Image (tube, one colour):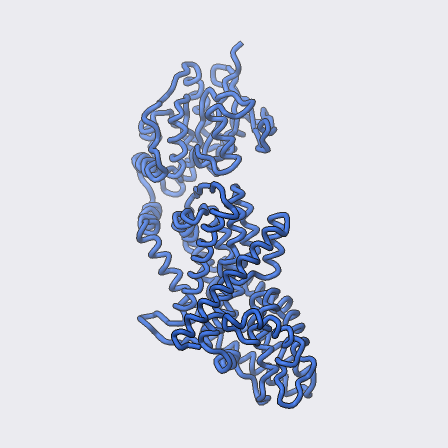
Amino acid sequence: MNPVPLVAVAGNPNAGKSALFNALTGARQKVGNYPGVTVERHVGKTVLPDGSPVELVDLPGAYGLDPTSLDEAVTRDVLIGRQAGERLPSALLIVVDASNLDNHLRFALQLIDLGLPTVVALNMIDMARRDGLELDAARLEELLGVPVVETVAVRRRGLDDVLSRLGELLAQPRKIRSGDGPPPDSLALQRRAREIATAAVVSEAPVRRITHQLDGVLLHPVAGPLILTVILFLMFQAVFSWSAVPADALEAGTMAAGEAIGNALPDGWLRSLVIDGLFAGVGAVVVFLPQILILFLFILVLESTGYMVRAAFIMDRLMSHAGLSGRAFIPLLSSFACAVPGIMATRTIDNEKDRLTTILVAPLMTCSARLPVYTLVIAAFIPAARIGPGIGLQGLVLFGLYVAGIIGALLAALVLRRTAVSGGGGAFMMELPKYQMPRLSDVGIGLWQRATIFLKRAGTIILATTVILWALASFPQAGTGQKQSEVSIAGKIGDAIHTVVAPIGFNKDISMALLPAMAAREVAVAAIGTVYALDAEDEAGLQTLEERLAGRWSLATALAFLAWFVFAPQCISTIAITRRETNGWRWPLFMVTYLFVLAYAAAGATYWTAVSFGLG
């Protein structure tokens, strides 16, 4: 008795493959695992038009026959007969998304070249027509050399035609096409897929043509990276230029409120706590809210327009040279907001070496908590000068700090992949979304959420840490002719830290700020503000923190401090999430150690270089 023919249902993720499988098999399905592999195996039965049964297996979605995950490895092994306990399919049913044909044909071309009897289901054809795309299935069938059937799986359209074409092929089993094989490299394969998809188009809406034209420029190997650089450069210019008015107003309001409340309170520890702790400390952080909102305004707009995924595509080639796949881009991009969700997002990376490397370098991406530190020091020491049309020196320095963090992350990844985390990496495939105008409501909600998160941190972690620091910096009280920062408990702790960081140009005030900054990056600003407020001799009013810094630091020290924060070990939350994601303390301790060494070396090199140029 001949076994029931086995048809493998294959295709890219999100092609509607499982929907078509379910529509064809109905309730006649079994779910289990492949032998020896924790990957679900969906098998079902259906009946061909001549009454003969056929068995279908729904393979995990894949982007190619070079697996980058366990799911893709199973798909490859089933298709070529390597999967233990699984027989070689008698035929293939390839499901492609009609509205994303050029991307889905990459995998289809590889599958067709396997030489098995094959039917292509041109699925979601209704969605393609809704978007203004009209395809010629007969022309596509001619170009591919295999039967092509239009389907709408969720509405059960085209199912009879699919079964009819499968029945014809299985009645006369033969290889449909062997050919010369698909192009050997991914770029040539993509080019061939795009040529076939273009030839199969009867008509398309202007918006689709515009999308292809934009991608031709934005994804160009030369123009694409240049455009991305310009966008990032403009973003950091805007952080300073657009925020000047609201930031100044917020700072003036904070100082006025602090002075008014301080004047209403009698001298004593409560007045010191309010002025020197809350307003000089926490208030010094809150005034940077406009800069953070402007940064996230750009990020939200780029995400909602569909450009951010294209930025990942552009960065994939650069990241591959550093031993990372493009799959690491989204977690690293998330780390610009905060390293904690960035590290959690590495769970989407299937390759363990890639994932661990991404976790270890995520803290080098400049999180939003660093922004108050950067903008404070830049505003205090870098002139607000124009060096070209629309180009400010302060924005240029901020852009350079972000670039330094990115370059540092890539270099660290390169070294890690050749030493502590050596091993093969995974490839990266992605689907590009359509371009669209950002919805103002979505952007507004995103900014509101970001402001809420920032203010909650200011009212919890930063507030608590600042109050503790204020207490340590306020007692015991300084005598006549003494500085409070020298005789306090915090001052003594700072003395111990200062012996370590003095060679790289850090003063005692910075030394006192480094330890509480481990709770949250912004606390460095609050800590310095509190220490300087307690040391202030004039009680008539509050000075801005920028004014106090400019009078007590050299430019060499300021530049070294910036270099330190590009590489410095992350906050306690980041260390804790790293420990959770790596199931132990080995890698968190390794991460803190190598980041400390990098930060110390970068700050020292910056300081002594600046001193050699007379900036000390």
